[in-house]
Image (cartoon, rainbow, N blue to C red; front, side, top):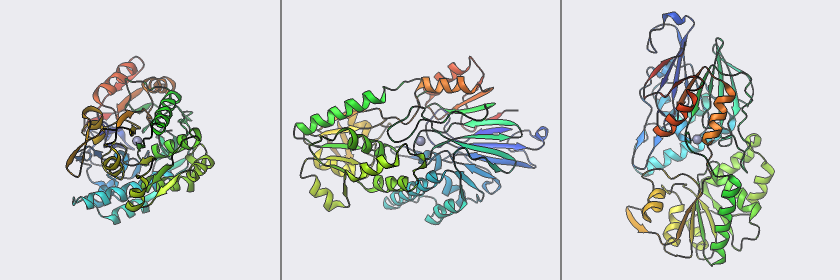
Length: 439
Ligand SMILES: [Zn+2]
């Protein structure tokens, strides 16, 4: 059996692992050998940076791939699906129902942005529809059969619908963690790591392979304190969020804990649509009822006119995008960012080259190709949806794999986790396009 890494090798982005095996393993020389074989993909993502879009390395003969297993909806795990369909892929895509619906929204949004910026996205909207047609929704802990493989999805605790995937192929067990978080948040439970069987081969993410997180409770406390302080000083609060997961977590936090806020909380656009979609399929949520109640406590802004009116008064504006790379949040910064009384509360990691990063490091953002100096106070909070290093290590300890393969983490993160795992098992930190024979 061969594993080939088309992306997410010593980097975060374009997750795509190819798995190829034959009923007659001795005939296999490498992944490209001719003959009767089965080929699966685990995820099929793109890498979005400030100035570029990177794809997985070449996937030969996509029409011969037998199935794709998708861990979760983020574009770095799904963004290449319509491209692959455009190139001839035509087989089942397995994921949870929530992942399916969220993927649809994210792909449509990405297509719209590409078209608006006059770039050709490389696929058509009908390819997104085709992704939906090929998708076979699965439930957590439901055993499914795909060709000669048995497979089970487990809640990965990363965003609603996210999954770790355990494959059993002719007795060989492979666990693909996808993006995983063990600790629960306000929105979702922590990962279900009571796998039915221990894997022989563990493919584990390493976004935080060398780092730990502050406790969530402490982060929430500081975040609420700053929100209140800003409002009490007569300022407004801008909260840039990712529409998928983070927006809902912040919504729950503000609605539950900050009853005394002396200004309205605003919520909008993509975040609202994703929340409604989660409520329609609440199985991945910790409490759908709480989320439903939270939605009743916020105000919705429909369009530019609404926004223009709202910014005239004090408010708390929860808005996309989380790294300020576009979206309505830039309008709030344009209107409110020159006032020292206001605060911008970043809710996660800010990628290199993004507006969020330049705001933290240099105090300015670029909007419509113009540089804008920001006078409002800027704070950053770690509401990460990824496991910290000790959680990743505990997962390796718990599952006792024979082989651990480390992906989805920058060089130092991946290497740090690899050093730990080498005490217990054989470890690979694959290079781009590397093929690993796991016989
Ligand atoms: Zn993710």
